[in-house]
Amino acid sequence: MGDHDTRPENTVIPTVRWEEPPDGPVLVLLDQTRLPHEEVELRCTDVQALVGAIRSLAVRGAPVLGVAGAYGVALAAARGYDVEDAVDLLANARPTAVNLAYGVERAAAAYRGAGQDEGPAAALAEARAVHAEDAAASTAMAAHGERLLAELVSGGGYRILTHCNTGALVSGGEGTALGVVLATHRSGELRRLWVDETRPLLQGSRLTAYEAARAGMPYTLLADSAAGSLFAAGEVDAVLVGADRIAADGSTANKVGSYPLAVLAHHHQVPFVVVAPTTTVDLETPDGASIEIEQRPGSEVTDLAPTPLGTQAYNPAFDVTPAALITAIVTENGVISPVTADRLAAVCAKRTGV
Image 1: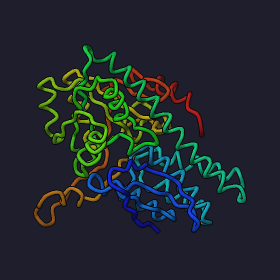
Image 2 (image 1 turned 90 degrees about the vertical axis):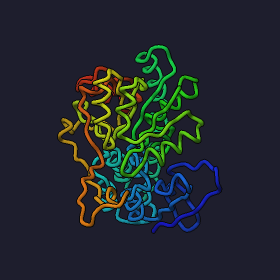
Image 3 (image 1 turned 120 degrees about the vertical axis):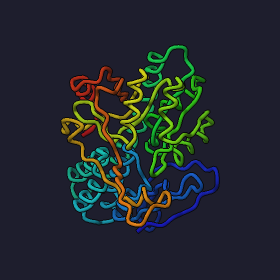
Image 4 (image 1 turned 90 degrees about the horizontal axis):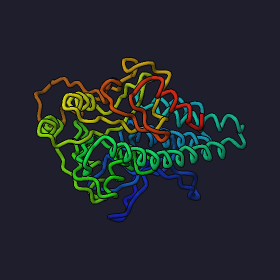
């Protein structure tokens, strides 16, 4: 089951954390559907509640889904649920984000290897390892990304455009693309962060603006369709986005609306940079066309504004950007540029874990 706890205003709340109260372990999530106006926690005591939180986007973002999935296996093991059933439910809760299945399998493999008696402790230890590794990856990506921007953009003082949400809300650390932006802000090099609304669920205006405001960044919100005019006016120095799955050829699936930004960036000769840990790379998916794209309910589109009764809506959660439009992919193990299958495989070969 799941229930909500409200925390004091202005308290910094971790996106995911494990608790062990007297009545049994709980996975506590910051409910992102309630942001930015309320900071509310969702307490999951079983896998069904966690799956519901994942599908409703109460917890979202590729890296943190891997963390949550690993903890979900540990939760099932600790509370005596069927672990293999939990693995199946969790791994298939959202089809595009490869990190979810990665985290689930890491914890499940630890559980199986330790046996029934020691399995719960082993699963929890592995989940904590996945969490710590993601935080470390976030720190490394921020450093690599900041150095890359210094090479790509002359004169300093970056004007960066981003799409969706890629900060601490999606990570065990400070994020992927927004983690790089935060590093430039701390070094005094961020002139302006352009934040796409990211329709229809508004992860940009609800979540990225929330994180940018907390960090004191100079940011401006814009409608997704206004990005083209910014490029035309020469107001964008670089585009930084995350990814939910990266295919073996370097094609990336990210929140729908990312591909049009890549096309605009290419036309205006602006760097388009993807920031993602190697856990987001799926070398078993050969190319972008092979990435399964999650289709969300049409009501997410039609409920935004009045529409005629019976209106049908096309609502893919993601789109795919081909490697040819990507200037670089920043990972915790280094920068891939130009983006090729061989370079991607070489960086992934350095990855630790399963």
